[in-house]
Image 1 (cartoon, rainbow, N blue to C red):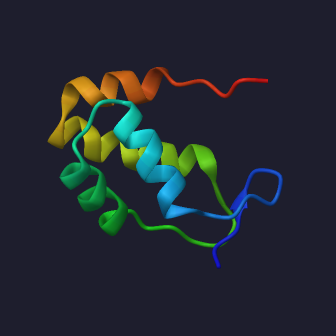
Image 2: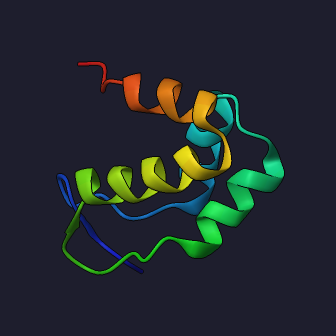
Length: 74
């Protein structure tokens, strides 16, 4: 299990998929991105978000803009 640098958060592909879909990308694009991201222990959530955003910009620019605008609610 890969731990991310964010309060000991664990990488959950389903959670990432949900956020990509919420941004408006198709399930196919979400699956491609999840399969291609390089997740490592200790990586920050920001680094993961940056990877996802870069891949979304190539596959679905409109969804990438929306994904970039997501902010964590406190």
